[in-house]
Length: 308
Image (cartoon, rainbow, N blue to C red; front, side, top):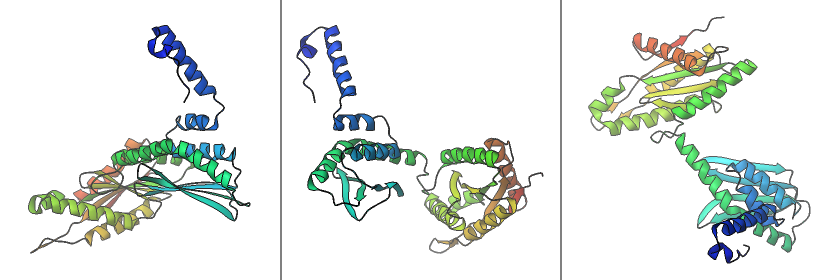
């Protein structure tokens, strides 16, 4: 770090400001790779963007053919890959203050020389703090979009996903269906057996929902004992089959409470997105279908049929 003249401590306010401006300008204009790297990395909390910057800066000092970064953040694998690999590689575990922030690997056709490995280590040493901040930001972001009880995405995540699905459906004409699934008479379970049993049932229900759908489908806790399932590339009748499979899986749940087994059924409402329909209208049609399922005795599926 450059020495700031004593005038910054003892001079007048305008003089202090002038020194600060000069230091800022020198920091911005510095050709030093480590200063430039930290400056560039500090402009973004996107881990993808940071890895692209890091690959560019490393490549300017040590040529390589491929770079891969891998880290598991809040149970989700994050992978960044650039280029095509060679037979020689060097691997680095990124750690800071006892915390692990992923593994970075470089590959190329020629063996890495010792001075090159030292240069890479110096660059990674300058990059680790911004990388840590980006990883923590992802963790916070995911926590804000995850239901703390069941571990599935929450209503906020569902709202964002429905907006994206609506746009894709309108743009490309793809079929997107929404299922609302409500556990029947769930209040009675809480009243009779307590919230510990009720919470356990909700966790099991979320797990069974995820088993009943494809990896491309998404399960959300919509609120209380209600879940939502977003199905891309799925029309009404296909979605109805998924809803019936969901009900079968939930019907098979049994929680032993000592002298009694507790089980629960589910009602489902299905609606397929209509061209030009906003997310709230789409959700309202699925909710109406769910209401019809409950009005017809529960433990069944109803579809809000689209026209045309």
